[in-house]
Amino acid sequence: MQCIDSVLLDLPEGVVTKDQDIISSYVTDFRRQYVGATAALLRPRNTAEVQAIIRACAKHKVGLVPQGGNTSYCTAATPSADGQELLVSLERMNRLRELDAENLSVTAEAGMILSDLQRAAADVGLMLPLALGSQQSCRIGGNLSTNAGGINVVRYGMTRDLVLGLEAVLPDGSLFSELNPLRKNNSGYDVKQLFIGAEGTLGVVTGVSLKLVRRPRQTITAFLAVRDIVSLATILDAAQTQSGEAITSFEYISGVSLNLLLGAKGHLRHPLEQESEHYVILEAATASPVLNLEECMSALLAELYESALISDGTIAASEQQRADLWHLRENIPEAEVHHGGSVKHDIAVRTSRLAAFIESACQLVRKYRSDAILSVYGHVGDGNVHFNIVPPDGTDKAIFKRSVEQDISPEIYRLAFEMGGTFSAEYGIGRVKLDLLQRYGAKGKVDLMKRIKTAIDPHGLLNPGKVVP
Image (tube, rainbow, N blue to C red; front, side):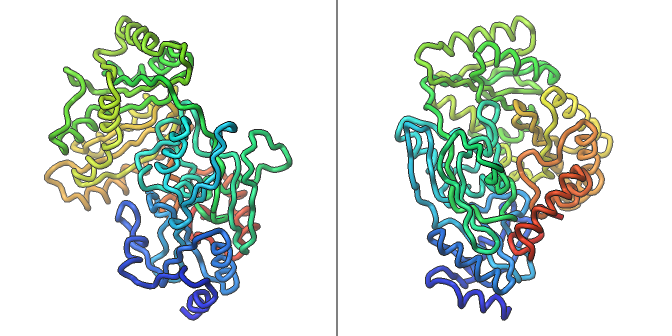
C-alpha cells in the first residue's frame, strides 16, 4: 500500500476518489460474477492527466487497470481482488474533438459514450456504423480496446475496420498520437492496430478518429422464419445478391431464444403467425435515392418462398416496427438473466460451417444434459454465434452452471477449434479466457503477443493478468 500511497501523492488534484461506496460499482464486473478491489479510482479529465497517472504508476511500479463503460464480459476492466492495482476510468474524457463531414470522419475522446457519438454523426446527416446492444453505456475507447463487433459487421467490419487514427498513452507515460483521419497512410508499421483488441494491456487509448458513412435514405428490415438451419448461408447469399451487397445485418435467433424472451416479457408479441425453430433478422440499407430496396426485398422474399427456404416472414412497415424487431434480438441476454443466467460461448467459425457447428454443438450438449435449455443466436452474417446454455427449471442454477463449465464447455471449444473456428469472436480474452488462449491460440501468435507485451510494457503494469498469459 505504501507504493500506492506514493502514486496518489504524485497525481493532479481532483483526479483521485477513495470513497469505497462510489468505487464499488466500478470494481464489480458487468456480469456481476467477479468483484475486484482498489484503493482508489482515478478519473482523469484530459490526456495530460492520463500521462501523469501512468508516469506515477511506472515510477512506483503499481499496476493500472483502464476502464471505459465497464461492459466487458471477460472481466477485462476489473481490477484484481488483492487491491494492489489502481483503476483508471476514462468517463470524464467524453468530448467530441472534431467532426469533418466532408471527410466522413469524426475524432473523439476515449470516454465518449457510443450512442452519443452516433447522435453527433446523425446530426450532420451521417452515420457511425458501429452498433452494439450496450451502446447506451459502452465507451468508444473500450470498443477499440476489445475490437467490438455488433450488428453491422457484415457491411462495415469490426471496430478496427473503422479506425483512421488513434491516440494512446504508453506504459512509461509517453504519448503515441496519430489522430489524423487519413484513409491512406502507408508510412511504415500501422502501429495503431496494436492497441485495437489489446484490452488496455499495451497502452491506454485516449482518443480515436473513425470513419463515418452517409446516412441511409432507405432501410428495409425483415424477420423471417427459416425452414432449415442448413440454409442460412444460402439465404445470406441470396440476400446479398438481390440487394446489390446492401445487407448490413444478418442475425440468427433460435426459436428457443425467442420463446425465452417472450416468456420473460409478457407484453412482447411474436412477429409471425406461426412459430419456427429458426429465425433470421436481415436488414439492408442504402444512401442511394435511386435504388429501390423495397423491390429488392420483395424479390428476395419471393425467391426464398419459391425455393422453400422460408415458411413465413414480415417486413417492418414503420420505424417503430423496425425497432420492435430489433428489440427481440437485443434483449435475449436479458431474458437469459431472467431465467437464471447462462453459460456463454462466444464462437466464430466460417459462415459456410456455422449451421454444422450449431447442429453438432446442440447434439453434444444433449448427450450430456438433455434437459439443458439452448439459447442460440448471433451475428451469423460474419460467422459469430452466441451458443449459451441456460439452466432448466427446478435445478440448482449454480451447480448446473459449474457442471456445464466443467464438462460441456471444453467440448464446445474443442468442436469450434476442430472446425477451424475460435473460442472468442468478439468478447475478447480478459482474465477468464487465458487458459483457452493457451490451449487453442496459435503458438506463434501467443509467443509474439508475449514478446510485444514485454517490449512495450516490460514491468507488466498495464492491465496485469489480462490477455497475455
